[in-house]
Image 1 (cartoon, rainbow, N blue to C red):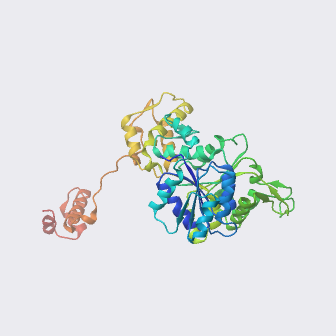
Image 2 (tube, rainbow, N blue to C red; image 1 turned 180 degrees about the vertical axis):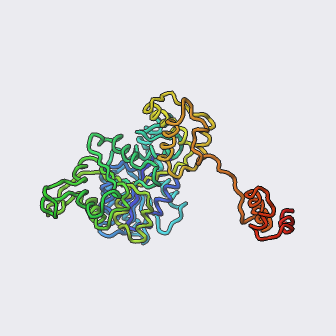
Image 3 (cartoon, helix red, strand yellow; image 1 turned 45 degrees about the vertical axis):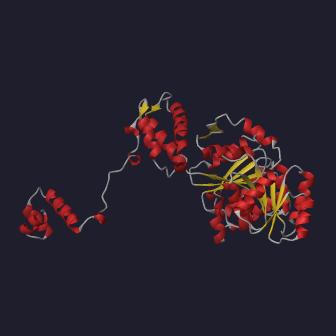
Length: 441
């Protein structure tokens, strides 16, 4: 289970950000990431942070400036400083500015763990105590997301953390794992639920139309622009825009998205005037976005702007405990829809469904349950389960057989095909009857 503390890590070195996040995730902390002081301040203003970890040497404003700001505006948040340029002066300045501890690069994961523990010592976290007191309540359905696994509990915990602020969220996972459902849960369970939620399938918009769809255009901006049209970002103003399949966005759109995130404004095509917007951006991808960054097909600076809060949706094969509550939900939903509200499922059928690896994830399971309800009478049993989910006919690997065994099997097949007529079989095999008899011994 995730611990209740939120840790903000600030470093202009993206590799160090990734390293710190991995280490803190291994300790079950939830992290927010920022690559500059101004970005970190934006997060501090909207997210309840329990520990600030910052590098000192950064371009523009340095870590000392951030520590000073946080010490005056967020005095109860403990501050931990990391740097690759240790000196007595920087150590003294850090502590004077409000840092509790000082960590020199390179450091081990154990040194980081100890420094984090030291930073938390003596701090009374009323928020964490309040949440913990309510932890006995078992939740298996949260805003339409259903489960009974540790992964499900961690997911709900993360949604609870981000639902009431406008921190940028990146949801990553295989197709069919419910990324849009998570985005909707973040929006509709939070403080901005009454404001717009706009879902955009970036992969479904032609590349040459994506900019005009997202940012809008002025009348006469291009051929066919007969009237001014606002974009999807303006339509989502005050609420949330969900950018699905963000990895398909062309580089020109990525550049404009980066400006939206940095300046919090959009400029319509054909216009010189920027419009201020207040919108939360949640993006999702089933691609390896970090791998795309390494190959140069996705902007590194945009990746880290989108990835302030990272949510990874685990495939269904890695959270088998979620399968039964999902089946129960789909039985109730589609049983009512197809006029079979009392439809049940046998234990043996459930056993087969839990055994399956579900490459199509929750979407595949939903489709299968829907099909079984249609095909069954009152109870779904083994006979109603599609054959491909059942154990397949066992086969032997011909590569592990001897040449004599393979030859004999082929002779028997030919004999069977000609009604055991040995003369005919010998003719087909181009051997005499005597050789045929010997090979069957």
